[in-house]
Image (cartoon, rainbow, N blue to C red):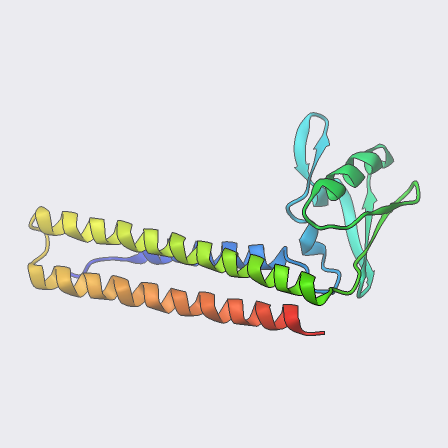
Length: 184
């Protein structure tokens, strides 16, 4: 019998997608609208993502313009951006908010590099937990005599190989993000 690891593989894929989203939210000198993806604004009593209440554009490499569909939200959006971990104070002209991203200092680049390393380590831990769940599943199959001991050993090796493959992908993504952050 061949043990099916699609469920565990899919979970690791989702972890990789989540990591990519985390990396996208870390700004690297250029203005990227994705840095605002996590910001939520109170709108009619609901926590609403910023891109659900405003259009976000990037007129140049270091500026984002947030134009709310309802100008009454300007102050709430401004507060949400200020209280986020972006470290940027938006300029409010009564119609739109301008976010001007300064060049990153060497110190800030190092801080951001530490942050992305933490995200990568969190992803690896999540993947190891998925592997552990897979190992428990294999042991349960063996206990119920659904697989032989040889099949159990092969399944455990296959799970480890799957984890190793995904850990490499995390390392590649981390390396690319670090290069992007340290580029001047």
